[in-house]
Length: 421
Image 1 (spheres, rainbow, N blue to C red):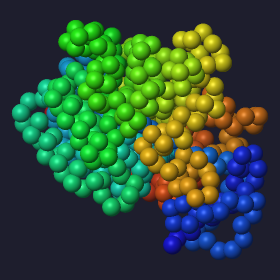
Image 2 (cartoon, one colour; image 1 turned 90 degrees about the vertical axis):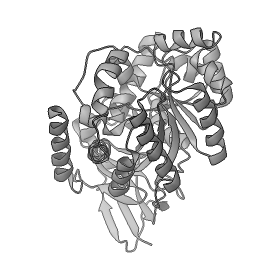
Image 3 (cartoon, one colour; image 1 turned 30 degrees about the vertical axis):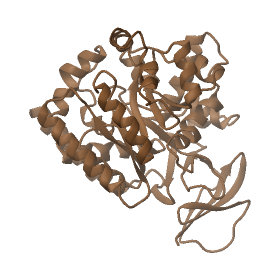
């Protein structure tokens, strides 16, 4: 079993050595003697923190970054994004997902929950690059027959593979939304997810239009109430956005122990609405996590940015500077994200899966050093990330990632092809 020794890291304000054996943290001590297969010496100038877990994205949309901006959500989707996505191939999704993973690693993220097409391309990219991922079985009832058939085959193949053999890839049911997936299909997904013990990942209550159309079609029910009636709402359900919640919605989500994936940057950019962070998390105690959404509606995949905007937007919306405290927001982006998808990680502790990030403490954005977490939430950008470890494997060391030039060149070629078609 391979070993990795992280020496002279700053952990909880003190210098420590951390030994990784296989894919778990074996020992944490002030000093660890002996040999290891690989040693990384932080020299007392780098802090060891949990990495980030991105609970909602569309990874290969990196290929559509800057393609369609400054427009309302349904115009963006119907007139630009869905027509462009219809041209994508599995190889495009592979290249776009590799680009997304490259960007995520550089900003300290080791897991993403993906809802997109041509899922085998995404699985291949995640397997090769060493990250964790939850890849969704995508459902869209409104697509044309050819697209539906292609997607059905992809879902069957993905479910049969169960995400491959690494143990880092899991499969979810990913119905796009209540307005794109029919009621019989949603009911079947609820049953199959329970039978197969898989999570459900769905956009929910993202716009006022979605809420009003749901009420008109379903006896006055909100999208959250409708999903509950169908049996979708549960502890293994991740609800993306939730920017139009009633008090009863919040109560239902809390009671069912469902998870909210909060994407402040995308929601602000598309003017979709504002998640009631203070009401849902600070007061009600709902399970909340952080995501980035896709790179064509954000337009980056930095969880550092999302933490800052989550904190600031919650304070602004509630009028309370004490809302969304830095330590809470950091916890949502790390431990809570891992827990939402059943990953035994998100904290630096003996016995846990060895996911970790080294942060440069001698970086301008990390100086002064009164409060590490406050600096990460309010000050830092991706340039503070030095080294990234996932499942005991070093994915980036001192800012260097294997095959970065090739990944960028292939992604640029895909973008040029899409631009010509």
